[in-house]
Image (cartoon, rainbow, N blue to C red; front, side, top):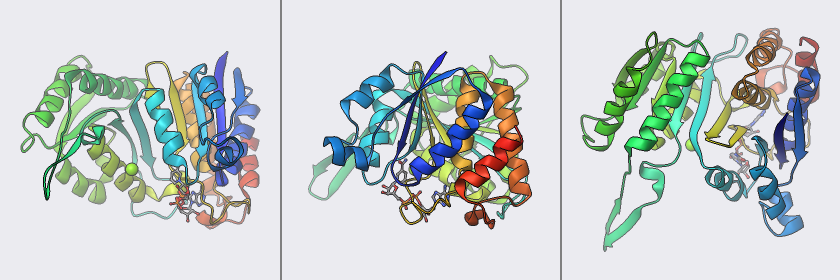
Length: 326
Ligand code: NAI
Ligand code: MG
């Protein structure tokens, strides 16, 4: 029995969480759900956006299913990622038939290192008008993230893992990352390994995103390229993500609390439902995840969607359409 901490949070977080829970309940997964509070409303109630009780319960859980927080997002989700030491940020980007986007037939997963690089916060003002930042890349963290990417490729039957870096300029840091990448790649026969410079990769991403399958990269490049990929395939209402650690995992849609549409019941539940699918895959329930994904594809292709994708359904109506196909 897996213990899942459910944190709907603020705004549309609550609405899309109800939709995802409808799907999980329909699948009758052997999960124990623990509902917890965090975010703007929790701060008003308890004086803290991430109440102690929530953090305590989260530490005892196998996974966190997170909706969205509002203005307190940094104090909630960024803090949770740190507290739970989730070293891998996973962002799939794929196109859907029936959704307008620049490209079709895109299906990639970006695996981003989540703990080091330029985001370590090692920034200094060394003299008046002179600032420096330290970029930390270690063999240990690089190996861990590269291995994660190859294991993901193996698990999902993907054919290629591509490393993105800038080893021609950052010879030491990116050089180490690239070297570790090919060392680990050697252990995975049958999965192709290649690499590109990050700048060239951005051009390919815009022009020929179909060439990417699994991408693995360092923290800052991963941050930027995953937003680029999300834009290439059609945006926020469809984008799920996961943060994975040795013991803990947090699953969250990329979007936020969307206060502009909150309370109207028109938020697109797809990102949250696909996020729940990532949790299912993480726990090894591949066929269940696949069933939900096929249902999502069908419902979107047939235009049975929320207004953001041109349909006229409410959040729960779209979820119900998906649930009916399971
Ligand atoms: P947002 O992601 O909440 O919304 C951006 C735009 O996309 C809005 O126009 C919204 O209506 C639309 N949108 C987002 N998700 C949608 C969905 N599922 N269906 C249909 N339309 C959708 O980002 P924004 O507006 O910058 O932030 C709003 C609040 O959310 C802020 O308080 C911010 O701090 C917070 N936030 C929280 C995040 C988190 O908890 N991980 C991430 C991003 C923002
Ligand atoms: Mg970002």
